[in-house]
Amino acid sequence: ELSAHTQGDTLNNEDELHAHTQGDTLDDEDELLADFCSEIHAKAGILIASYNRAPAYAARVPNTPLPPVQHWSDVAFLQWQYLQEDEQGTRGLKYILRESIENEDTLAIVERITNDLAAGEDLYWPGLVLDANSEQAMALLGTPNGGGVAWMLAQHRQQLGHKVVEKVVLFYHLSKVAKQKQEALNLLFCLRDVNAD
Image (cartoon, rainbow, N blue to C red; front, side, top):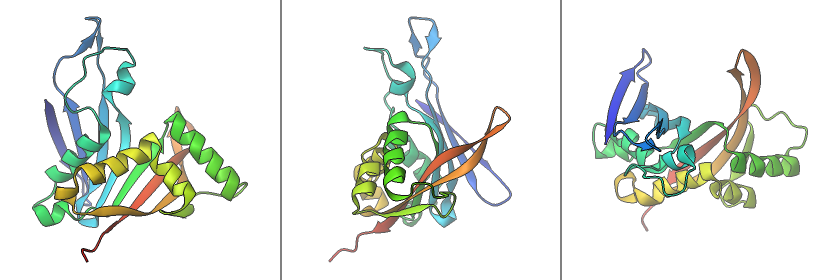
């Protein structure tokens, strides 16, 4: 069971937060934690995945009972759909930003890409733009962070319309962690509708 909490800010942007409300535990002691935090800018067609920790990642314990909705792609779609006024709005998704990525597999792929294509370059915005058909963009779509985007588009095609990733923008920003600034990786997946021929 998910409960939704929506808060609007002065710029008409929406932060959509879902919390798992079923009392799952590990060994009758530790709570099963999952976080799927997104910022949604519905009118601009932007979904920003700002902090995500799936139940399987949080548990890391074999044979752990998991909640029915456990993947980022499912929760992000529900968050997006919840804030749309109609079907037209649901189909208006144009960008998915995976922000401040910490996943080690994704970071390793990004390191290889930047070493090959942009060694020594400043990759703050506008960053490194990769055509979706490039080997590097395909590799990013195969990471846990990119795969979630691809899975969301495929799994919810009926509601979102037939969308594909047109390009991936890889860039960094300075993030304040424990009062220290450090670089944080971001992947912006730019989407386009596939025209019916």
